[in-house]
Length: 404
Image (cartoon, rainbow, N blue to C red; front, side, top):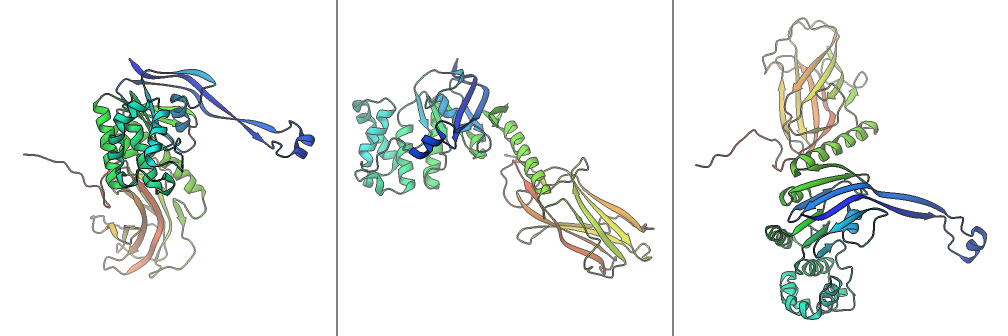
């Protein structure tokens, strides 16, 4: 049995541009304003089983909130149909029914009545609502005196204490302080155990993955992918990384390649580093990498004099706090360089780039075995790492737990 069925739903908003606003404009322009159509959802179909927890993810403007408003019947589709089975509670616009001059207690009655509760039913619930909100000493003062956090806590407490069959949540997992957020999350987990159907829209992917049985990714009004939370979230993060990577490569000052044929050389100059590229496993320029992905550093050089076999190429990665995360060179790795060509390339392949989220910079060097520099390029390129995993720090270590 499905608690929610969204069948081939399309929503169209009409935007009036140049609409007359004064009497003079009306007389001159009459009804000549330009009407444009904005389609936030296009032929969307989603089915949610009874007792299932579903997360909706996507970028801003992708149609996530519109979908929740359609399910809650705040607005209606232009095409298709939406079927819900059971009492629906919406945490879409917290406090939408609050009156600023009413007290917290009075607003509880007003807000709960919007959900269809009678006064007698609210009387039975009001102590639980006040207790959960932790606003006992402020409950009989006007809500216009509340902070934004207090206001949202009261609204959240009303919405989750009406025992719904279906709970719709839009970007409100960050209500109040850390303690209250944890309390809210525990309440949602309790709802899930009771078999209440939950649909959540949020950018908090960690909470989505932890709480939901299924995730739906919406992009530009269409369902891009749906399935297990971990799989869909990873696909979404890959999409964001590729998009940001392309944008960064197109922006001036952000590149996966730097030409070094001009400028000052640190060292003797007998060998010069002329170009450095950051590439992915397919040999394409890249600025953003995923934790555990493969990366190539291609170093172009030009030899200006005979240096024999006394040549070492090295690299180092620093985070944005200047901490050396990793460094090595051909000598330390036992790679002997003999008969170096006048011009050529050195490729350093990182099979698993196990750095965690953050911005990093790359240093490249060429020197003698005793450390005397031929050339050194500091912070020659910067790049970013994004990680779908939740470990903290700088580097991901291959590990496992064993409980004996």
